[in-house]
Length: 143
Length: 183
Image 1 (tube, rainbow over the protein chains, first blue to last red):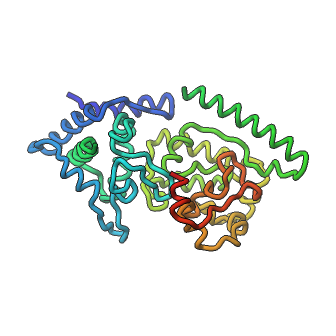
Image 2: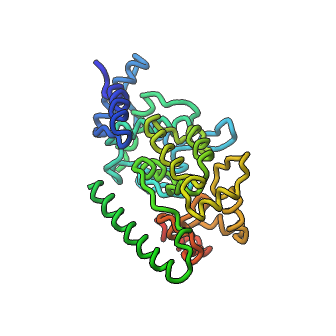
């Protein structure tokens, strides 16, 4: 069984080749979690579900990068995921928590794009499916 | 929805431009300094997720090529895009670049850069630096400005490609009032 995310990655290349831009793959946060759980099981057979606490740690913990820059998700998105953040170029970022911004985690292509950028930015490596699922699980828990 | 918005934007842009051309013809003659209206859906959507979408006429083609060739290291951020979107935006930027578009202000920017260099920051081009030499360091750091990347903080009509001095309004230093105004 192919997961929706692998399917999405393939699909984005196909559609992207035709229309160029504006690729979207509608989803709900819950559907994305199912997809990430399939991938997480593949990465680690001992996978035992996603955790709000681990997601909260991932979101809030500052980390010192090799270049001496302190980086964290909350650095730009603020400590409260329901609040608007601010990019390094000083532009507003719409809130990450679906409770405050229902458009979050409703497009698999967008979600993967931002994980692919921001995980290397903060962690200096890609995120695992476990981490992505934990992250979304935490943000969904914020009411 | 999107189509209608784009259409309305195009009509608005045409109206604004038409009006400004009339006005410019009437008194100060610098209508050509306004950067030409440009549009590209991917440029608008992708670049503006982190910063205002900078007009392609603010840097020469070689700068845009260099910048779009390393989005993984984009001024300290990872701004990687899928290759199709990246190439779409790169073509658009190069086709409307400062040394390509024939606009007077763009030509001045292009002429102020040594041919051997390809600056990636608009504020590092000779023309833009010289235009801002009277701005003190603390003004750039004001909460509503934040950094030199935030053109529209003072150039209120930057989004229309208009950087004329008469439309500049520098935000005051008061931190809370200004920050609240921007949110």
